[in-house]
Length: 215
Image (tube, rainbow, N blue to C red; front, side, top):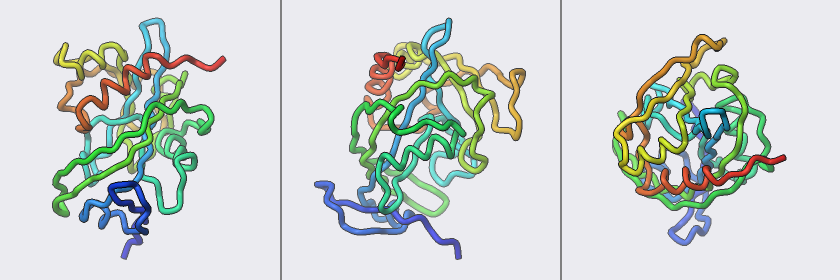
């Protein structure tokens, strides 16, 4: 029997209730904490938003595009420690001190998996950071991330504001070695992304547009 990850669970006032297995957290709809980090890159074309494609084997929202790096806080873990997700998923050694806090979001959603209905109640700490890596220079986590992509941040804002129906992006599929000539062009729509609370992406992208690179 595979040992499941344990998560801290909370009530509606964010008071700690105890510890629960991850599958039970989602089955019963317990509040829990998560970490989100969106990466951006400044280029001659403008500021680019970097996002990942979830692995097709993921239990929830397989194969959809999502936050650059994100994850649940394990039982006893702090948000600072959860920044490990960036290294684990992308191979990018950013420290917590290099991240800019954007906001904290309480979000509730519901969906279906092969195991039944899930109820997701998250308190998400959302961060932004800069990365100057080319897409093919990342090292992606095999069982979590199937590719990494980027598109102009202003165009992604327009997409989620309903001002355009698609955006041109470029990306690479996860592979043991990724090279410059592995980068390809794609077109993405809102339907290709994991659904989040209304306004989440607009708020996040607006704050990312205001980020100032550290000197």
